[in-house]
Length: 231
Image (cartoon, rainbow, N blue to C red; front, side, top):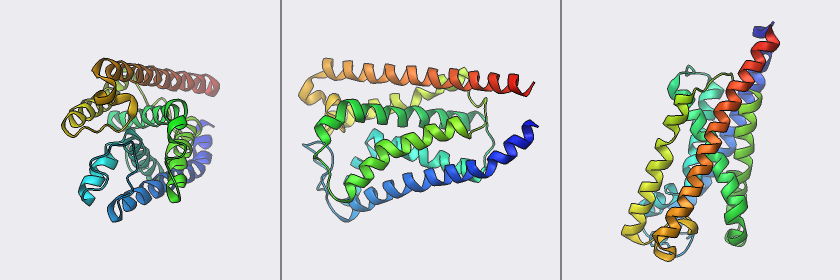
C-alpha cells in the first residue's frame, strides 16, 4: 500500500518540481540577461560594478544571497523533477541548503529589506523580485513538505549546511573591503562599522542555523509519522 501511494504522487511531484524550476529559471534568466545587456544599477548604492563590464555586473548579481539561494532551488528542482540522482548525502545537503537559503531570502526580504526596497524596482524587475523573493520560497518549501521522500536528512547534513553561508559571508566582507560595496545594507561595514555589521551577520546566521535544525527535525519527525501510519 505505501508503494502505491508513492507511485500515485510521482507525477504531481515531478510537475511541481518542474514548475518550481521554470519559475526560478525564468526569473534568474531575466535578471542575468538584463545585467549583461544593460546596466540597470539594481542593488544598493553605491555599487561600483553596476555600470561596469557585463562580467563585473554578472559577478555583482551573483554576489547576492537571493541569487545564490534561487540557483540552489533551481538545481534541486531540476534533479527532483528528473529523478536522475539518488538521494545520497550530497543530494540531502543540496536540498537542506536550498530550503534554508530560500527561507532566509523570504524572511529577510519581507522583514528587513522590503520597507527600503519597495520603490527600487520597475518594469520586469518587479516581476522577478516577486518570483525570487516570494513565489520560489513558497514553491520550494511547499514541494518539500508535500512531495519529497523522507527521511532525506540527517544531523550531519545540518553540519554540512554551514559551509555555504560561512563562505558567502567571508567572500562578502572581503570583497566589500576591497571595492567598498556590500549586497545588503545591514552588512555594509563601511557605513555601519564592523561591530554592527558582524552583529547583524551573527543574527542572520543564527536564524539560518535554527531554520536548518528545524528542517532536519521536521523531516525526521514526518518520516517517523509516515512509518507509524504505514504500520
